[in-house]
Amino acid sequence: MKKETGKTMKNTQLMKRFAPYFKKYYPSLAIDLFCAGLTTIGELVLPLIVKRITNTAINDISQLTVRLVLTLGGVYILLRIIDAAAYYYMTSYGHIMGTKIESDMRADLFAHLQKLPFSYYDDMKVGQLMSRITNDLFEITEFAHHCPEEFFIAGVKITATFIILCNVNVPLTLILFAVLPLMLICTVRSRRNMRLAFKKRKHELGEINSQAEDSLLGIRVVKSFANEDEENRKFAAGNKRFFKAKAESYKYMGAFHSTTRVFEGLMYIVIVVIGALYMIKGKISPADYTAYLLYVSTLLLSIKRIVEFSEQFENGMTGIERFVEIMDTPVGIKDSENAKPIDRVRGDVTFDNVTFKYSEEKGDVLSHINLEVRAGENVAIVGPSGSGKTTLCSLIPRFYELTGGRILIDGKDIRDITLSSLRSNIGVVQQDVYLFSGTVRENIAYGKPGATDDEIVAAAKLAGAHEFIESLPDGYDTYVGERGVMLSGGQKQRISIARVFVKNPPILILDEATSALDNESELLVQHSLSQLAKGRTTFTIAHRLTTIKNATVIIVLTENGIEEKGTHEELMAKKGIYYELYSLYEKHC
Image (tube, rainbow, N blue to C red; front, side, top):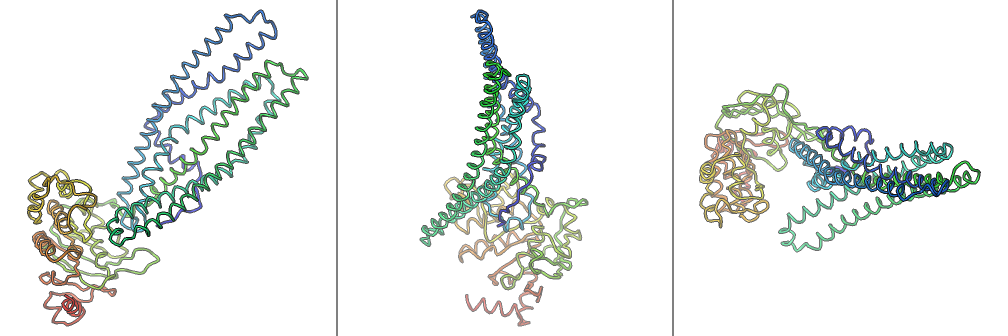
């Protein structure tokens, strides 16, 4: 699992990556910002109304009529009604806009995850990915909605307040605004610490998700070993790390807010004291002084809103950063510019000087492999654990990219075949069967989306699964549970075989498909596999060597490459590695 680093991307970089998601919603955003502007009018007009009433009362109380007061009150009530309507749009349709952006980003993220190679998932926890798909993007909804609004409202209020205050008293206004840059400088470092803390907090939340998922999916193993206390201990450790990360983020958040409150109080007292001195010297009237304090209050409330929004802002930026980290992960395996679909595949497969290693830091798993497989042949691959049997077969559908050499199907380099076309012509039956949460019918049809009921039933019959499916409570509509937990190992395997039957690929990979089954289930599944392999180019990886005696050719793969090759009889006659493996297997059976 890749660990979080202490580095963060610049806000400008993140905003450039985030801004395109607003493009489709510019009309909604424009209306939202217009409404945001309307909500500022009432706050900006109120001090002017107070100033007008105060000045009129001081200069000539007789001019302060009921009509004037009611007119000013009516104007303010009208502005408040407009404010309410604008605020309704902001809180409803503004949030809907944010949700649409969140949905678009989630769709892009999920689509990108579908493109990433096996190597990415080899060292990435699913719980971490789930945290980024759900929690992080939910916070982006709030960010997408509030970020433009809050900055726009603050910009309007600060600009308008500056202009109005300059008309009242320029020196006092300049003193007030001179404090703002100092406040900004002092809060920048706190904000950076907040970002790092929020990023760490999200990472630890992902770790908790991973721990919970791992434990709950393996709950049967946990209970069978009576290891509930061990799982509680591991979860408690993760929970404690999350608590520490969250507590640290709150400390930085507290420091940030405390700093701004100090400056807020400083600005208030500066204006109160200096403004009072100006009033004593006659440089500002009592009415102007009152209005000035009201505008300062409006200004500081705007700054306070921005400060309070900073937590949401940093959460949103952290979510965007974690989104970008995944989106910037290279796809690695993708269609070349000249890639074309392949049709009418015969099934000839050639390994031409194939070399592969998982990373630059690790040595070669496979080195200079050469193998010719003709259409319809059944090739069995045996050898000690770690010799690269599964890896060799995983290279055919390009689950991993070759380090050197090439693989040809019907004479065409697989890198010049579109991935979709390549993989649609290859069927894989694995030892660890994965059934999706759904019905039997849906799991079989997964091999060919849109398959008819007749095709599904025919595939089930060929896989030897029809009879037991019919005996299930709801037949083909029986819910199989998460990962097929309601079915036996043999039943799950036969459904997975039916899934490949309905796909009907010309090339087949059987990766230790019966090694985890009991003898009775193995016989049933082995018969299904024999039916499936007929007429197809088949690669069989097997630990149970008796199941491959009838293979067209058997290759013995070791860390040195292909050491032996031939039929069962030929290899037994050689009395080499295969002979030793087979003899050892028979001895323990």
